Image (tube, rainbow, N blue to C red; front, side):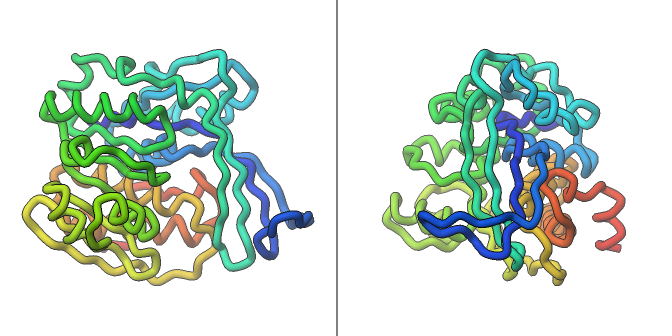
Length: 292
């Protein structure tokens, strides 16, 4: 079972020819609202890949809450999602003609989610605790410490990049970063940005995603490199979250790190080939078909 402690947002998605510049007003080619948030996206990706997932987080008492929860309601256990006075988290996402994205997030209710929402009994039942950085930093740090004490595997997607102490980071079993986040982490730690360099400095597992070049990891005593799926990119918005969620699901089922990364890479490729955030995340049978 996977506990996902993370953000639940509503994405306001604008399709544009090119990214807006400071002081510029652009007319979008299209607009939609969709459920999102790194925590929710990763929880849904893990659930669609077959994992049992408990979502822990917070939403507001507003009209956006139902949009944010619409896919999680049937795919995951949302009994530990709190309704709070702050507004539901939201994100403005711009997607250009090349499929690239630019995102601005308003955390809202996500900052109210607390480590204590994951009770001790639940924590001791979990194989994996999956976290990101769109919640209160102290809450994430506390849960990392508690997961370590409970001997649950902790996976931290250090996104968006935010400086945590080396001591806290070293308590994680696996830290997942993209290239930009790896550079930021390397700057804080004064080391190289490769997975091997970061893992050596932190004395724990590090996985670095490389976009179209695939992913590499130095973790659990192994160095693993996998290629990216070759696809026509339509929308990369949820690709990283899809990768992390499916990775967690595969590790939860006992797959090796290499097999889990290969599966996650294929699922992320499928997500890139479709428009949308959560609606782009594939089901388990779709990923199975690509791997067969």
